[in-house]
Amino acid sequence: MNLRTLKSQSGFTLAELIIVMVIIAIIAAASIGIYTGMFGSADVTAITGNISKLKASCEQYASMNGGSYTGISAAALQTDGLLPSNSWTTSTDTATPPNTSLVSSYYIGPAVDQGGSFAIGFTPSNASFPWQAALQICNNFENQIYGYAIGTTAPAAGGYTSISPTVPCSGGIKSTTFSSGDSLYLEFE
Image (cartoon, rainbow, N blue to C red; front, top):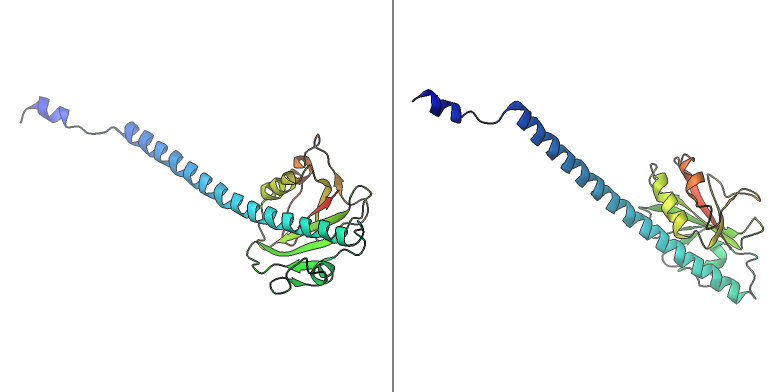
């Protein structure tokens, strides 16, 4: 075997191998990010769907009561047949869905601020519910709500952050730590 043949069989350099490993790591990280985003968006869609159904029930409640939201609660919706009694469990102002993997309970109550008619809130089952998901849910209803609040109890008068289409929810939710036991409350106009 001559020296020229030996030189042509040298293989990859260390720099080439490092570049290939970096490219593989970037592709793997992007794949994980895409998968996580898809899972999170499915949760947001499910919660948004439930809030939309509860919102329609609240509006039907007002229609049945001469346009008034006075006395609205989860129990009142169930009594009036607007919330299924065979699959949802209710106390006075909270409703527990049949599947609690995403949300442990929904709050339904009257508005406490002047601009609203009723409020719907939810407490995530997952202790590490991301603020990005809360932001997306808030933004999904942005043109329909008077304000939002985050906390462990339903807000009192003046407790909602007022919003409008020109002032998105993002400012307040991004600066709020969404911790275990916190709920996101939306006050509908």
